[in-house]
Amino acid sequence: MLSAMSTDTDLTAPSRRAILRWGSATAASVGLFGSAALTACAGPSPAHSDPTDRGPDALVRLEEESGVRIGAVGISSAARVAHRAEEAFPMCSLFKVLAVASLLRERAYDDAYWAEPIPFGPADLVEDSPVTSATTTWAMSPTALADAALRFSDNTAGNLLLAELGGPEAITTFAADLGAASTRLDRWEPELNEATPGDLRDTSTPSDIALLYRALLLEDRAGVLTGARLRDWMLRNTTSAARIRAGLDGDVELADKTGAGSYGVVNDAGMLWSAGSDPVTLVILTRTDDPAAANDNEVVAEATRIIMSELTRG
Image (cartoon, rainbow, N blue to C red; front, side, top):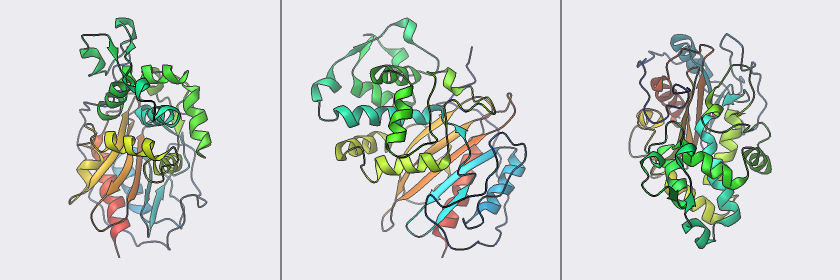
């Protein structure tokens, strides 16, 4: 079975706190879609990001110390940090935000639709489905499925939402509609978490995820009600305590979605709000080339510390 491929809700991993010394900051930041000189995803050795982006050196050192490949984008109103921003990384459960958003874009104001139970059976259950596997009714409304998918990363709920959209290809189309041309979904849960190096199926890039999450959560480009409902669910996410949340200091509100898969994939991405500051976009995608690699949450937490330090320094 694929039990190691999507343990998004209960990752057991060795903690590695990199002891990093900051390199000098590079030139002033560029926009989200500035050019970058980056290596291919399957390459074996770390590569530096675009020299016009800030903060790549410490992320390179974190890669070297942890053995984990890191793709990251951090955006504030005044700065941008990017590393491997245009490389393809497995999305894993990050697709669930796009699935819910796509349904909301079409039917956000259809209250009857969101309340109507969708039936499913034991044959529909897949691994890592903490909410749907506890059912006693074998039917859940789209509202309940969205809550399960976004807040608990329930894989069966993700598949049932995909079925409502007509299949994984709907995610590729939705992402392209918002301008994310390097994002594609090809398979269902749990196969989409295989994360085989060099396989472009079910992948996105840090730049694409940043674009998509900003479009949905900050710019309301799929509709104001869509953005409001996504923020409501994602601000109450239960799966990020050991990832981005662990790397944050102070009173920060985080609307995020996590993902995990084989080859050590651990992802977390979302928007951050704190009093007196503009929103921050943060995307951290990780992987290795080792099929036996453990999912290491601490790499994401440490990358969060690095990027937030760069974004907030004077």
